[in-house]
Image (tube, rainbow, N blue to C red; front, side):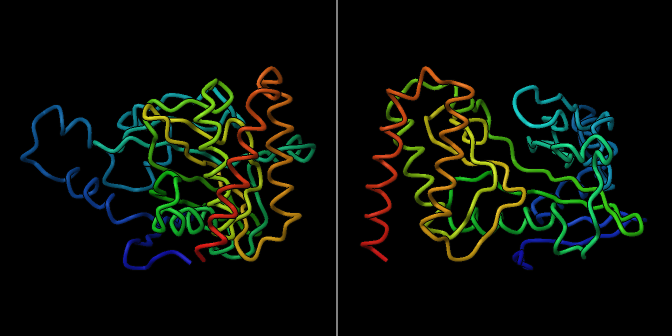
Length: 260
């Protein structure tokens, strides 16, 4: 469940949007006639939250994200807020038939609202995940499309491009903290672990993530998936850095168990 005191829910036609109240300033400032010409231009068109999810909206200054994902993510600006917009796309064989539609099971069970809720809970509990800013779903009968906006981690790069043992150790500790928070990541890979300019590690992309008690098998499954990613994308890093990550994970896991 999202935190009601932090979010607003709005409807526009077939679109339902949930957004963090910090974005209310975007709506307010888009109607502020006292802004300088430059700021007026930055906020023009952003009074309607539906436009936040349209990469063709000029005010977003959208730039396609070229690394990772399924070619459906953009760096954007919501006024003075830097964000990442992602449209949900299917993978696998079904993507050849259905690119971006999912079966409707209710708003709270939609991909976007579910991910928004999980990320907000983690962010409010000081886990290193980007702040979720807004989620949108467009219902069409028995199906829907979806999109999500999160805060951008400026200057971040994937773990795959890092050869700093300290950063790999921090990645292990972060994953252990995520598991201690009873969160299972559906696609833990070297592109969904980002390293910022201060060498802090962030976890992104909680689509299809689950919360609840995690078994040792589920924890191991997350790490195994990450190892497969290392072997596929950066096999030259495995021998030196994978043991660093797993050792840090084990130490942090034991420490977290000790203090809880």
